[in-house]
Length: 72
Image 1 (cartoon, one colour):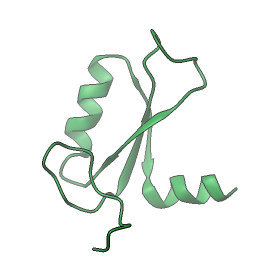
Image 2 (tube, rainbow, N blue to C red):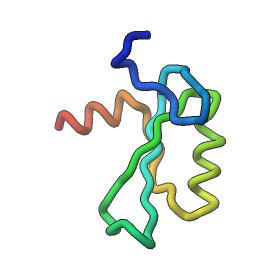
Image 3 (cartoon, rainbow, N blue to C red):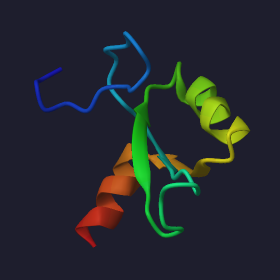
């Protein structure tokens, strides 16, 4: 892994990210705004549940798909 390799957002995890969890907090963000957390395979479900229980989770896509969409 290099310094520019995206890593998982789970606390203490240093694994390479594979997933992007797009979310927003409707109390403070406009509906179209998307914040992101990155997740490795091991933490994808845990982080998704954390955001989902709060009603924040909007989408879960692979990091490759997210980066391809950003390039346009």
